[in-house]
Length: 111
Image 1 (tube, helix red, strand yellow):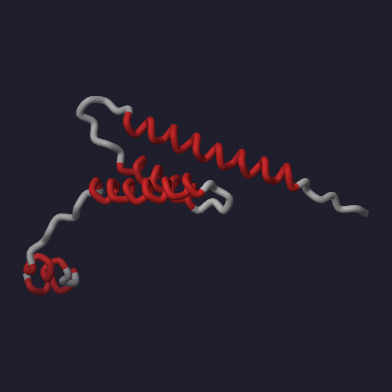
Image 2: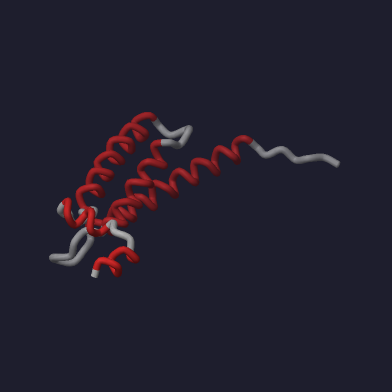
């Protein structure tokens, strides 16, 4: 029984093809982020997906150094954008903080 070995050239071509697919999908996502109706807020989830794609591209082992650096920088910028758009939790006063942590059974006894 012989075991066929994969041709390194085919493996390299498949990796390049996957890299191109990742770049193409990233560009597609970015174009959808900017194409929104007037007054419509940017989508935080889409920005987060774009940031993850940029991060994944920057971590590819055989990616061009210029592309890697660009993806790293853009990933940081998109991460900042996501952080800015995330809804902030409502601030509670110290009294509300302690009242909110009271066990449910205790509230019935106090009333």
